[in-house]
View 1: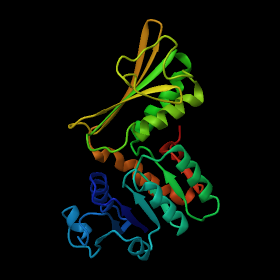
View 2: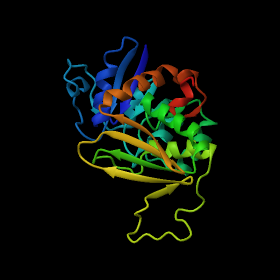
View 3: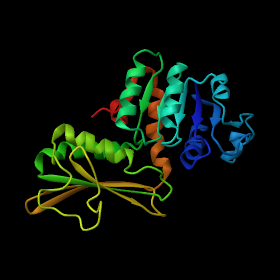
View 4: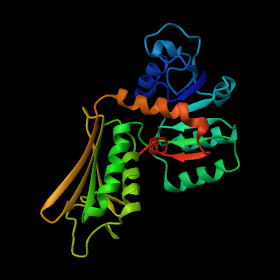
Length: 265
């Protein structure tokens, strides 16, 4: 039995994954952490029977439930602090929250070298999204340039998305398309109209109600384009990857990045 605590348990992702996790025979939910609905039974959150486990905002309560792994679905303003706390207390943590900076990720990697805690950072739990990233990396060698358009719901706090950043990183390992954000004679008549720029790739972020999580990687060459597209229409699309991550955590190194680390390509 794997003992699990969830950070951000009252958010949309937390509630969606909590409902799925309750259905597994080898998972036990023992703690829920959030800044809202304090004292509410986590069973009530998903319309189940009373569990006796209350939503808390205290790290001490989280530690007292002795989780084998913490799953973090919070946000960019607290995720780094949460990870550092887990490392300090030698608790394994799977991070679904995005918004970590490059420097923060490097610092976390260093911290795990002197801790028994395992940190698994997963920008996207959707297996389809990970396949999209892998296909994009393979495709890069055959085209002259590439841009990314990522679309998410209007409540997403960070932009660009962690998935688009991870995609750009994967592509740049294969091919670096651009050294500079703008070409020599290129002019933006409206500031930032060419989007953000990361690892030689332009990333364009769209935030609208009605969307969930969508990304298109568009490659261009003479006389042709190729688009690799992935859509998550429901948060249930993230659950198979999450379950796989939970069951794999003990086999991983102290620091692991990306669901592709446990998929066999």
